[in-house]
Image: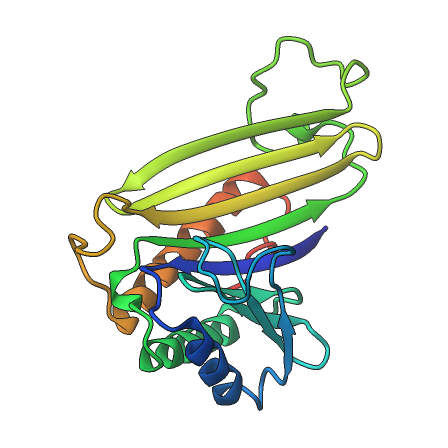
Length: 227
């Protein structure tokens, strides 16, 4: 079993001058994230704003952790996750810097925290996971790929998306747990505003929700979401 990736993504109203913002973020995080990579989609003019598209990636020398930015999106990605404390410290530093450099973080309309787990040599995903099969035929010989997805509203402003993918050829299993907040009604005048402290509190609550659901889904393995 391996925890493949942990991702925090925040969406907010588009920043007015993305070129200045990208330059400022590069300079501000040069020590911990010295490598900069442009991610411009082919065929599009540079710095043209496109909703949800990341334009630059900043990473450390070993690229085990990175963050990405676009005109209306920031993601923080750990490819070798060790603990939540280090992850949340990087998130706080990156979001605080982004707010200083002009992003409307306080107007965030979507926040998502994902833990993507990978398991090998799984004979039956529904026996391995504490999850009921929605299929009447339990034979995996007739299909190469199975996907089961469930989205629950836990409370106001907090959803949990459970996404299970199983490949019957190599018996690989992906368990993708995504806790998210979403409010697309009026992104320029949201019903609530987010301080950095409030965002950190929400992320911490989402982490605990994912951690508890991982324990429930995979009771024999509890190390997928570390404290």
